[in-house]
Image 1: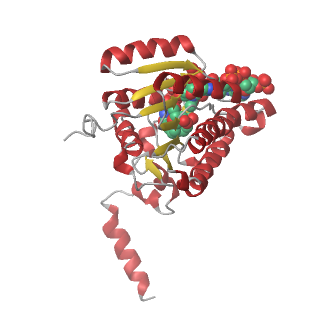
Image 2: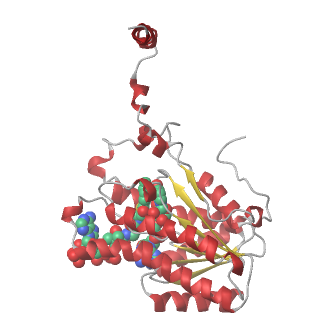
Image 3: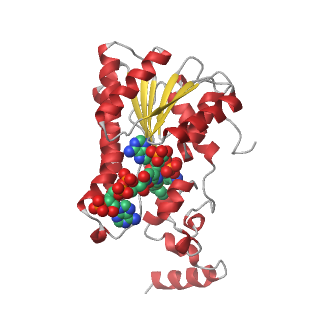
Length: 293
Ligand code: HXC
Ligand code: NAP
């Protein structure tokens, strides 16, 4: 078995309609592809309709599934409501909202204008809020059950991270929203879960987090105990499971998929990894000798 193999059975998402914000690129596109392969109808949204239309054609040809491309800036509630209406008009209902759209870039925080900080908060936190409120209220009003929201966060939603402070702040808010609504809206038949990916190379993220000038100096794979970055299919397998009925008892969970990256940074003595194997006999002897002193 290969970890890049497709995990779920072919009809796992048959009959489901899924909205993927930011579905025209990177991880959103990869998850959309797999959802379509598993039988789902997918609505992909972002600001760039030409890109979305290209991806729609590409994925319909590749998977034989149905895709609808809709322009929608998640920061704007009117655009989100219009996107929701068009999705319902086309497919009759939506079962799953995947809040994947994001904005981010590295910067010392003191270099950020108030508008730069707001821009990231608005895309990530306010955008997730706009979509979640719109879809959630509709599910409540129409008494549609067996629905779910999947939010893409990051591991620094709980550790925080220097140089991406607006993103860390916003993702922490999204995680709090996930856990809060998992409890409050469960009575309406909605589930809320999140995925916290470690490094999964995408053009959007790498251009803004690892620009060419520093790319050679920071090998993200080295930060990962498993010594590699993630493969998109690994994330898509997890996302497909979480939006499928196989995960019907999963609610309020955040699943980390990072090869152990964040824990490596957290464990106080993890730096001892740098000690060569040969030195351990000597160290053990030194430590044992101290026991009696
Ligand atoms: C400082 C910057 C800046 C930079 C923009 N700004 N880039 N400030 N350093 N590098 C400032 C601008 O000057 C402006 O403030 C404000 O931010 C808004 O910029 P605009 O370009 O007008 O915004 P907009 O066109 O809406 O674009 C949003 C964006 C852009 C976030 C800046 O990069 C974008 O569209 N990103 C979408 C895709 C993305 O970011 N993907 C990566 C997700 S990766 P002023 O004051 O001048 O008006 C991710 C990974 C997490 O989340 C974890 C990885 C391990
Ligand atoms: P990406 O390709 O840049 O994806 C971001 C998407 O969001 C784009 O499709 C973009 O499309 C869309 N978007 C941005 N602003 C928007 C707005 N205002 N309204 C609507 N859509 C907007 O980057 P990615 O790496 O695939 O990131 C996907 C998700 O994974 C994000 O939530 C990110 O935080 C998360 N993540 C990624 C990694 C990683 O290693 N790649 C790690 C942890 C978490 P347009 O530009 O066309 O609008």
